[in-house]
Length: 112
Length: 111
Image (cartoon, rainbow over all chains, first blue to last red):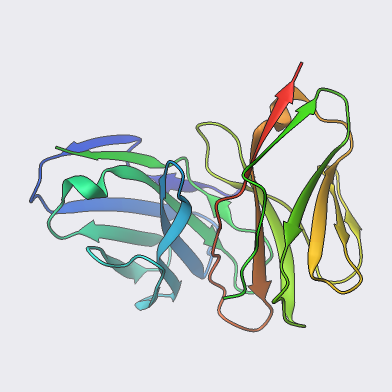
């Protein structure tokens, strides 16, 4: 079974902290994605990576950066967390050219 | 990215068929139609995809209009476990493999 694992299910951070959300997949997928999900707004793409060290901005990259040093790991970084970044964060991965993406269980981040 | 339009919500009764519509009037010839669903407290999961012809799998059927400007996800017999948000997404073959979701349709299944 494909597994996409997000490091934390719940996280509480303070305003101004640097926050790292980690995502690991075990199926050698080229593509990895970070989304945030807020009530009434659906899933919004933050960043997409199609290979190690390669990335594309999604619809809402402001306030976020990403790191993909190894194929299996895709990190989302909040340089200086703010309360409006309180959200559910979802990571996904897929094989290049594949129809199906696999999602992690999500990290619910609260910034206080 | 080509856009899709779905109703915000739909209701169904258990064991009845459900037809979830999606409009994609700006679809291009190389866009595949994908459907995902998100059960409560879970990440989305793939349901089905197609290009031109209707498709069936163990989860659902996908009916694609002849002009491809709309499609319908069909759940043949809804169960309580089918209550979820259903997302219709277009993905361009050979283009960027970004997956861009809309707001989806929240399906409620009544016992």
